[in-house]
Length: 295
Image (cartoon, rainbow, N blue to C red; front, side):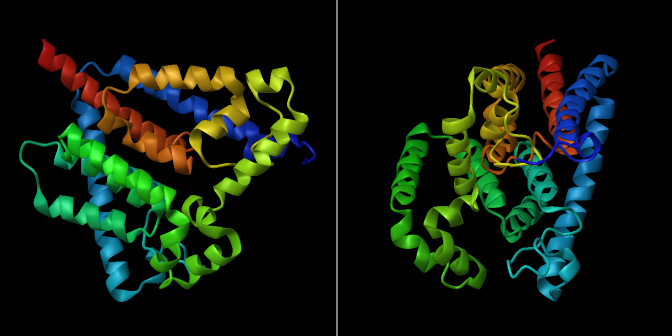
């Protein structure tokens, strides 16, 4: 394990992550307390929409003219374009605005197409997952069709090692990952190997306090980047249950949970204060709208 350094912990390590998780929750509590109308909240989301749509244009321009600055993974050999936003921000913010757009009574086809293209062109599995969840949870209304899709998805997942090599044969980057780490390494971007290491640490080094409150593994030492596991690693069963209860009570619908569901496999949401705040303000806007309609 790494030698503890207070300054590093405060500026980039465990203490820093604790602040990044805690401060957005406090900010959102204050935001709800001082906002008695939807005006500022709606203006904030409108501002985010302008940024996201501008970034979506940059993604398309980056693809057409092969602009390195707009690449998701510059100089890595991995394909994708995220515009002027970093990858995680582009995924979460584009998803929020896309959900906003398709939930309107009058849908802007141009905006929906642009946002859909941006999520596809990111070259990230989290972008594809978010797009799939938006399609599955919002656009598909029939529970029977959802059940069929879920069944097909489980079959494809169960047979992944049999067909994935053909799918990624065109990508030198992912083909190399497949040869080195197998089909599951490709699917989880090596997070499965972090999970194996975490399991070994649990078996050999965990005691009751670690199970309850975490603390054995610090952010500086290992990040699994799968939200539920990271919360358990850093805050134990107590922290995981507390966060789960908070989200279950706070999130009004499945469509608003999509950024959280994506974070279950990427882990970007909770440890990024800005994304957490934007997501929270968006949820608050929905709750305010429901309250106004009820009155």
